[in-house]
Image (cartoon, rainbow, N blue to C red; front, top):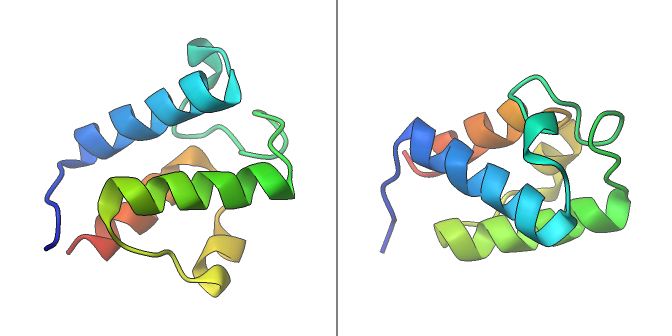
Length: 84
């Protein structure tokens, strides 16, 4: 069963995950924020984020697609595409 979320709901959940699970200041999380440079995630954090998003969406982001993700906006767009 596929879940349906608006883009705003996806951004809010993504922000919530980054703030609560990765202890990132909410003010730092913007669509333009680079996951690695601005938010200081490492490759293990990125994998953990992908797993958390899989639970949220019931969809798996392909490793190739996830390698292309750089910003918060990229993550949100990828999730929105998966849920179509």
